[in-house]
Image (cartoon, rainbow, N blue to C red; front, side, top):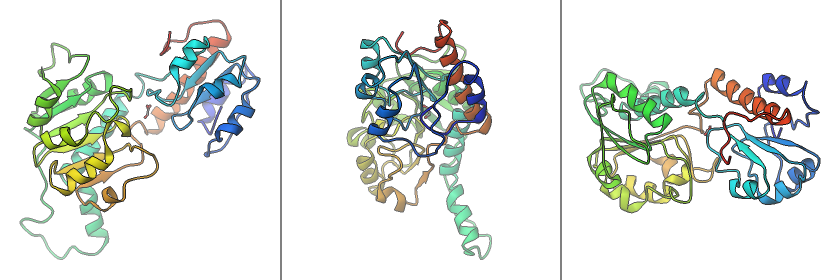
Length: 310
Ligand code: GLV
């Protein structure tokens, strides 16, 4: 186990394995991790641990990498495939929490909640004013879902209560009982008031949203990213916001976490969070226990339910 996990996850593994637990919030650097994995059958990794071919080669007995996340861009899945190592993730259980947080960001950015909070705390509230901290409506607007997979669909489902028109773009389509139009990415960007990203990070989605795409967005539009930072060209976004198109952004993920572009830190039209979308206590604990369960399955010759390279 590469770093601190909820204790319940350790308790699941202990009856089945000798656990080498790096019980720290700070990960191991590549050399330290290589030294630590030499005899292991399984690695429980987190999204902050790059699991490279070198790490795999340092662990000749390795059978499974159980990543405590739905995303697995930190694991070289191709290299795992070549070495016959299974990679598992934790999908499903974090869908609703992630969708909830996407909405929290959307509403916070559109209605300027963090700015309002700072305003009150700073003692700047003098009186009620007719145009004080006015934001954008969310209800009745057009929501564009880029990547209508499990999480994208959960975000779209919540939009029903806000009377929104829904556009979507991606490999999957939204279910027939959901009133949504499948459109090209360009059409989605040009027509949506809120664009929410829910694609995995792959070579195809790296910088999917760059300067050209941002320039297609409406001037008042809001870009929400709870997927992976590198899906958006962060430098291009900082420039686009400075030039007023799109009007705002709500970002939970960044290109080089935990570093955030200084221009975004200074921009009042950006709401920032430190990669929290799945972070309800119950969800994060379940992610940890699910990863342990996957390892127990493999150690006992069973097929774990969520193999990403099988
Ligand atoms: C979190 O970002 C995850 O991929 O689970």
